Amino acid sequence: MGNHNKQINYLCSDLVTVNYTDRAGHRQRVTANLEEIAPNRLSLLVDFRIPTGSRATIEVRGLILRGRARKAEHTDDLGWFVEVRLAPDSQWSRDRYTPEHMLNLEPSFCRHRPATKVNALESPSGY
Image 1 (cartoon, rainbow, N blue to C red):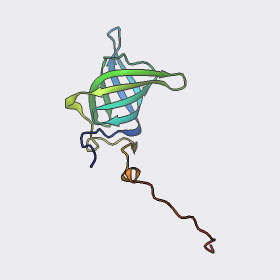
Image 2: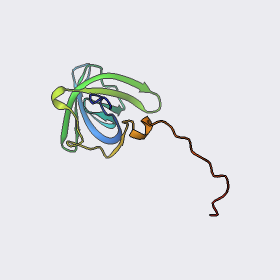
Image 3: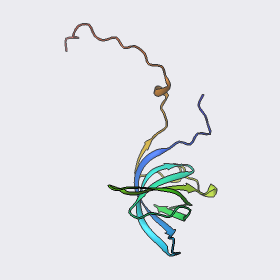
Image 4: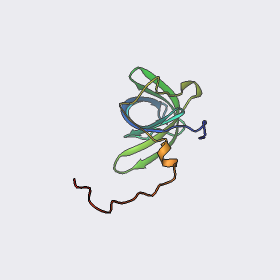
């Protein structure tokens, strides 16, 4: 069967509040869009870069997740995508919080099955 240690990633969309310390040592509080989530990491879309290595606290609907910014990638059209690695004692689960919009990226059972040949109709069915 499948690998039970594999992390399941979810595409999602939900507004969250992010607290972090900038390079000058000032505490910042920004609104971000949660783009992707897994038990040990998440991805945010923000207007300003969160420095790599910064401690980040993500707040959403009463849940607080803590971690560190691990990488940031800029796009001209959208802003900064920032990956946050969650602390071991701050892991995410669906039992704790489910984003407003969420899509499971785990490969489905059907994707692992060999393709079967489909016979085309040789004549119309009458409908």
